[in-house]
Length: 218
Image (cartoon, rainbow, N blue to C red; front, side, top):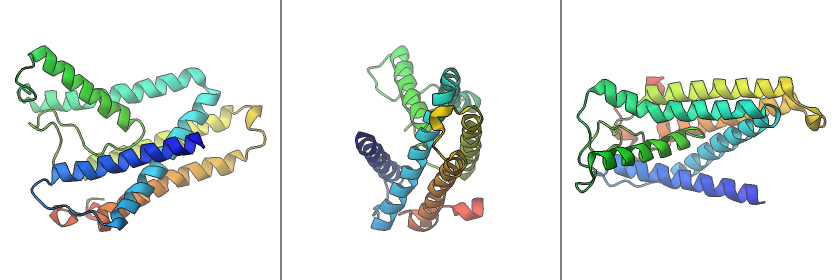
């Protein structure tokens, strides 16, 4: 019961972050979110987060030491990614976050921001993409390529972790139909991707402002 309540709480938080990110990106427009959009986001985040957490738990139950390596690699990758993009852009260091902050204080705040960004992306696609070269620190463009790469890599990673769990599973899972669970989790993650596609293709409140639809981008 507590696990279900925790999952619902996290999904609701992800849903609210999605809506907030849309309003920040399109703050010049009157954004009206329809019930269908709420439903798609809820289903998208539910499948995405639930399957991701389950995959990590199953993998960690049989390969305890390796799960820390997987989490650390994911975290460092997403933590350093905004900084690498910022370095490649050769943009000046952000100075407009807070006038009273020193350069060291600004760096600390940016590190906390990318820390949060990395923590979110370990489990689901972040609603707001951090861009340190932007004055608002949030990317205002819709990057279909980055999203596509994220979900392809994440699906492959989940499949690999499940395969490792299937190979090294213990007698604890003797009464669990492992092939069926393997298939259900992969289908569950694909269902999350499906609802994400439906949201951006049909239910996004600002889809008319996109330069291209997600199906055209794919």
